[in-house]
Amino acid sequence: MEKENRHFVYMLKCKDGTLYTGYTNDIRKRVRMHEQGKGAKYTKGRGPFKLV
Image 1: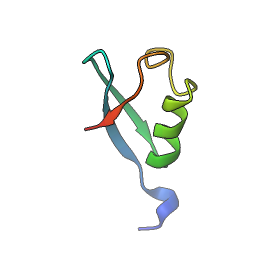
Image 2: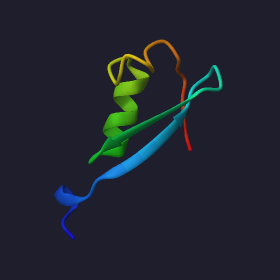
Image 3: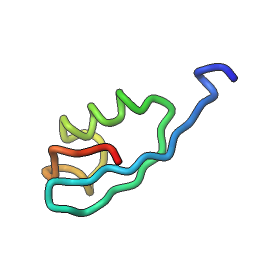
Image 4: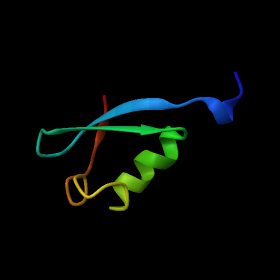
């Protein structure tokens, strides 16, 4: 399977103990976006995150 066609469901544990689930084809880039406050409304201000 080509890399461009691979997608991932991922889960982040936020610093407040809540979990966020997302979907992406580039997990490293997406987690980086969350860390920068640009990933999703829910995760904004809830970092740092742990990929679980």
